[in-house]
Amino acid sequence: MKLPAELRSCISEITFDKNGRALVKLHDRTKALAELMRTIAQSPEEVRRRGANARELIERTFNWEHEATKLTDLYDRLTARSTVPN
Image (cartoon, rainbow, N blue to C red; front, top):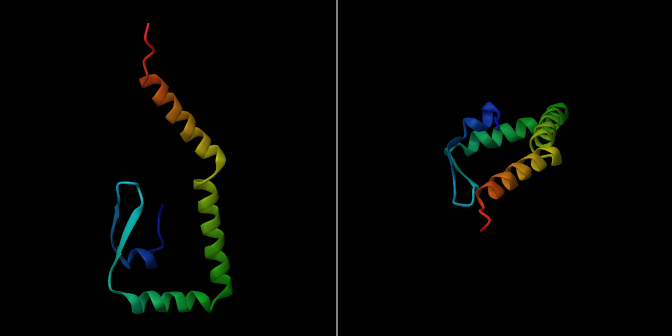
């Protein structure tokens, strides 16, 4: 997933824990982030545009067809590894 440049500039590192959850370390740029949020909040059109982009990304990335394919692939891998005794 590609983050907007404004957010990328605030992030110093992204790592993942053993459960696959993202751990995000931010630069100490609270003023810059606050200013970005203030600017966006003052522009209803920008809020709509970013909201539409976020929705499209989520719908494309997290949809049942995509998840079904991942599950089917997982089941196929698991059943291929299992052995049935004679």
